[in-house]
Image (cartoon, rainbow, N blue to C red; front, side):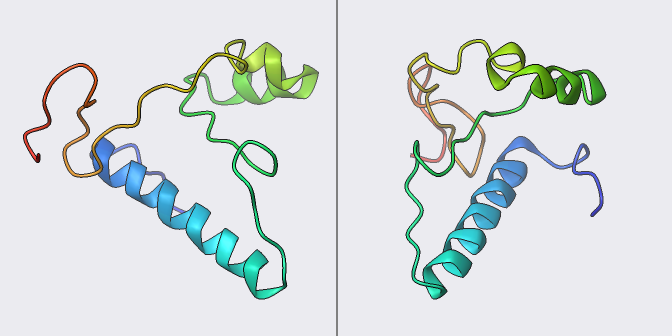
Length: 91
């Protein structure tokens, strides 16, 4: 799969959502319902590539220490702005 570093943030977020929906549909076709927070979570982006993978090998909390914190606000899928910090030009 090609890297998406060159894609705008909004497009990368859509790709993540599309992938999650595809996987959830595959599970649903086999009679399983995925529940956010129980079966999967969106940890967001973490810079570091291989270093993040090594940290995850020692424990998810080592790589993502705020895992128990309230979720970050979602970004607008069209423009990438956060609705909590400023008005989205799309709204």
